[in-house]
Image (cartoon, rainbow, N blue to C red; front, side, top):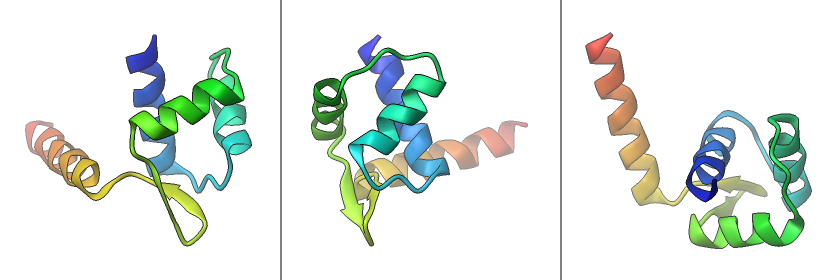
Length: 77
């Protein structure tokens, strides 16, 4: 469940501007996850999320991997 939840968080960070733990929690709950603040805090730490201009963002190395993956998917489709 952790990997799936963290993948969902990664997608949410890419798609939305999330400022707080509560923003992430609300989004996860809307997608059917039962999470606590402690769980989200742990996920933020494990994913090495950073804040940039007040919003959570993915670390640079993960952003590059996501961008490369998205380019590959576009070529295949």
